[in-house]
Length: 138
Image (tube, rainbow, N blue to C red; front, top):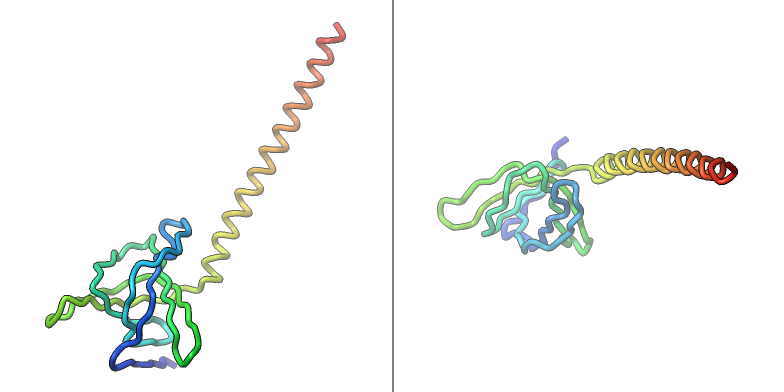
């Protein structure tokens, strides 16, 4: 069931560039005006020209009914109003927990590679140290 909340005058929100190409930034970008919330996306307008690229994850932080709300997503749609310089965007939500799971998987992979490297280094050092002892005994 698709539920929609519309705000006639818009509500103020802070837009952050949360992540760029898998690098966490979480830097405030601009103040935007939210005009619609659905269970799939949030629509807002701004005078900023925001890029439509896959490697950027945005965070929108606002307060609705005295409750702070943080939404994460990717901007997939942009259109300009004919009567103004404002640009309308649709940010489609991503599940941050699923996104973090991807990062956790990547971190675990890097950890296992590091452990393998450390084990190989220990074996090489042990071999090298035994070789020194043999050379020292001769």
